[in-house]
Amino acid sequence: PNHPGGGQQNYALILTNKSGRTCTVHGYPGVAFVDGAGKQVSVDPTRAPGQPSTVELSAGNSAWAPLSFANVQMTGVETVTPATVVITPPDQRASLPTPWNGDPVTNSNEGSVPKVGPLTAGTGS
Image (cartoon, rainbow, N blue to C red; front, side, top):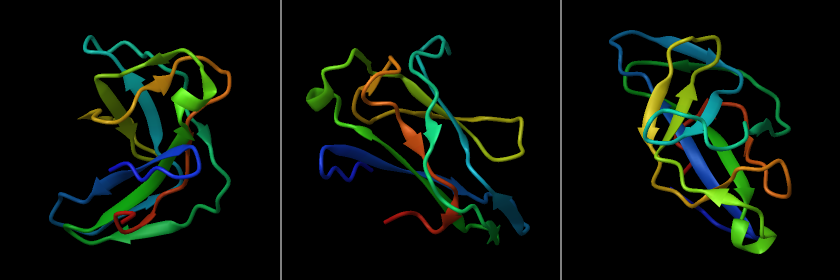
């Protein structure tokens, strides 16, 4: 969900443990915005300041990372509306594609580069 404020678009990237056993995550997720053909259409998000910690997730529990970028209508930068956001958990090679239902994002390195924060326990709500 988007929680706009102060000219920012703010989203929670949520990872849920769907296995039957406890796992841990630590760090920042990888994030890419892609079109319907799987081609990257936006710049890579930068890492927001934060102190990563190890999050223990029992079966069914979640961790989340904040994703934010300036409202592109306020910055006037070139934008694109991706079809999918591809999230890669820290220290993993397998990615998790998820339909992007959010606002347009910048596809330039000027003004509105998305930022992703470290994973923490919960869902960000």
